[in-house]
Length: 238
Image (cartoon, rainbow, N blue to C red):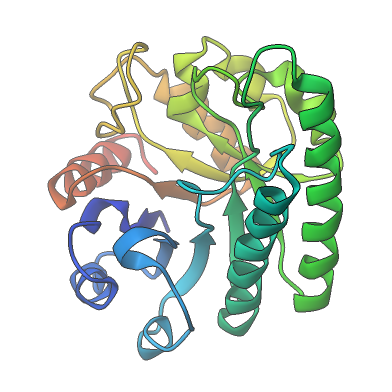
């Protein structure tokens, strides 16, 4: 079963989004941010979905060298892990970024500290977390496979659209990822377009997912894009 991210309904409340997705899938990834921010498991528990959570990311930097911001970022991710534990869900996190040129060493030190703290909370809550690769954004970690060296003790979420933007999708497919976001683009913009509408070689991607038994999560921007993607995936026999 292909999972669906609530990103396709981010202009609606979480309850409205889950209601609309009922019948389309049994696996939902909640964008735990903005209007879908989960302060408790109360709303998701009303539905029978299997869940994963995408921890808040817009105001979070687990690699911040400003210690109050780093600590607060870890606290926000930890709250997502705690709620995920109650939902029997996994969690996707962003890898953080270095805020200025020349600050990579100190940012990496902060990142390692954060990952150790997040891993401890994950152990306590019984939750698996995945670090997601980023598109071609300045200063962000893990936009290329070379950065895997900083996350080799972590589980990986492969984002196909992000990897395609950096021209490294084939290399990312060789990493030991266990969670996957799928969407398409033309290689120049992180458009989160329907599967099959851009330049990604879906035969290769879907073949790898099938071989590894990884359930993909559609991370597109509208319900229409979800339906278009599901139809394309069906044509690929997925």
